[in-house]
Length: 137
Image (cartoon, rainbow, N blue to C red; front, side, top):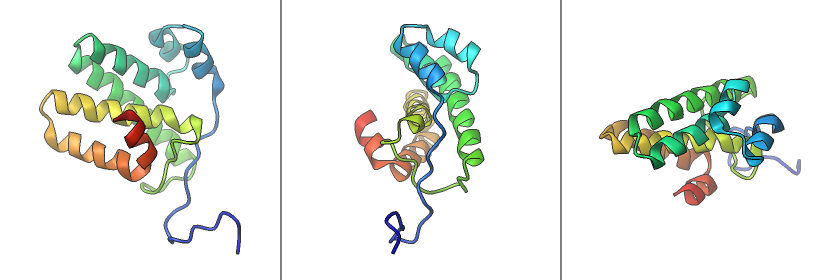
């Protein structure tokens, strides 16, 4: 038996490739807007923009940023072999931008009263990574 065999029979976890540039710029204090402009495919930059907008009460803006990060993340997941379901582990740091954007999209959807989207995104987050759902709330 292989060490990493999936005993539940589901798809294997998807691990996005590491792109440390956006993460390092954000950690160094570069604004998320500048990082998103330099790395427009970075879900992490868009998720951070969504968080900032939400914190200042710009919920529709947060929703738009989160949706952008979510779709950029879906593109990356598909390029990495993801088939529309299966684990996207929080423990793999490059996955966190997508998971943060998905969480931000659920949060903003709830805030604007889009209950169906909130429920869909919340369930998708739990299904993708129970650890992310717990950490992000």
